[in-house]
Amino acid sequence: MTIDVTVSGGKVSTAKQLVDVPVGSPVELVVTSDVADHVHVHGYDEMVDVVPGVPARVGFIASIPGVFEVELENAKLRLLQLRVQ
Ligand SMILES: [Cu+2]
Image (tube, rainbow, N blue to C red; front, side, top):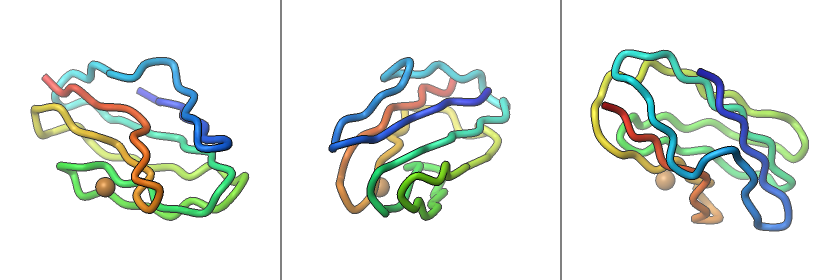
């Protein structure tokens, strides 16, 4: 599944705050931000840089069950949570 997230003026826009993901599914996060930062997927230790206005992509297989925060790291801004089960 592909999950789009936009951050503008410190506000997060995305379809769902809590996204259900079946274990073993490929996940791609596409994050567009108006500030430079890092996208961090907790639990999976995925971290990618994001630069203003350029969509950053984070792709991985959701192999670990649990609830995991996806964060804009420096801003300590929660983008969403993934519920893998
Ligand atoms: Cu983090």
